[in-house]
Image (tube, rainbow over all chains, first blue to last red; front, side):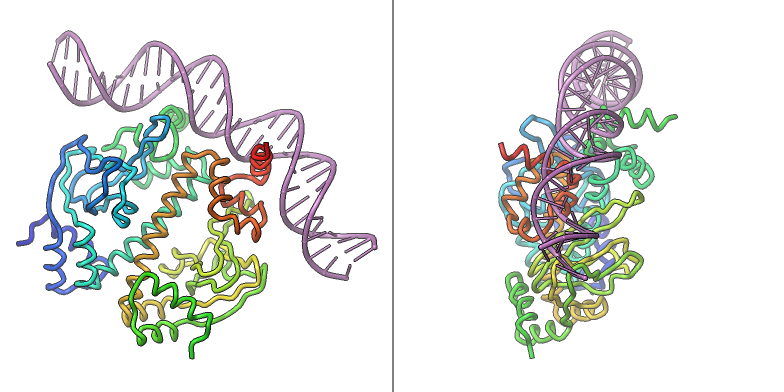
Length: 195
Length: 195
DNA sequence: TTTATTTCTTAACACAGGTCAAGTACTTCA
DNA sequence: TGAAGTACTTGACCTGTGTTAAGAAATAAA
């Protein structure tokens, strides 16, 4: 009863851990499929993040709004990536974030209880997430490093080089926020680059 | 044959996962004990980070030196915490970082091969690290958020409040670098605070 | 189409934090 | 105890990025 959508997850799990046919079906049966339309929210502040989401096809962002009403973007995620507010998901306490679809998006999701159950049923899935978090942690440290000690122009150029696809799918305002600067600053940087 | 040093690790593992007596001894036998003197390096750039370290008692920092010769501190870690260059550890490629003892420090360590072996022997240890990385990831996102969108004075005051102990054990220069500012700026912030 | 809305750019000005340089106070160790 | 090194502070000046405000360009809606 597996669909191509869910099989994409299996493909990515298998990149990192060995799983049996039984494991596969246990994993697949734990997820639900769904879609969300562009500009709709998967999560809003105050709500508990009840699911962890795997984007099959589409694009989403996580952001929050500060005291002054300014949006700050934490994540921009595309096809074959996980998204969610892990803090709220694991603690099951209210979130501070919005998760919004930037395109019509197809995803699969798993609830906290079902995930905990799955960790027990399929130890390899525990390992898969260990590896996933390990990589996410290292990547976030790199991003922290860049934000603390590299000028914005370098961060922008690195992004251009490593994620050129993003610029096709996401407005520059969002990329600016993700890089930790204002749209005006990004504009100046781009001007400087074209010379 | 367990020593009090290794039992501290077991105590912390048990906070997060259930392990049997057999698991305990499997874990303990995978670690080696050692000590390092103040100002000595556990790792220097170019070297592969062959071990992951658990600090039993003491204090260490991870830092790198940029093109201009300026030190940038990534981590300050104390008793009952893990330290290492995960990127180098997992890839077994040369590190860019120094790991230095800031006090005479007692630690236990585990090699990559031994850890991989242990993950197979004791699935609960896989889970323990999954939970550890999950928390480390969320914490690093918070630190990223603060560095991108909170002024240095707030970051300093948060640190004062949440880790007052650090100020007893680590020079302000290091705390400044960890916060992403210069010692001069930290000095001005402290002056402003005393009014 | 035309209109409305969103995205992007530009300019003038402000400010946090960096840089450079000097001086003071605190540690460490002979 | 004194000398040398390290840690911390202060001041003058500089720079990158934020802020505010306006307009141009692109996109979506009617």
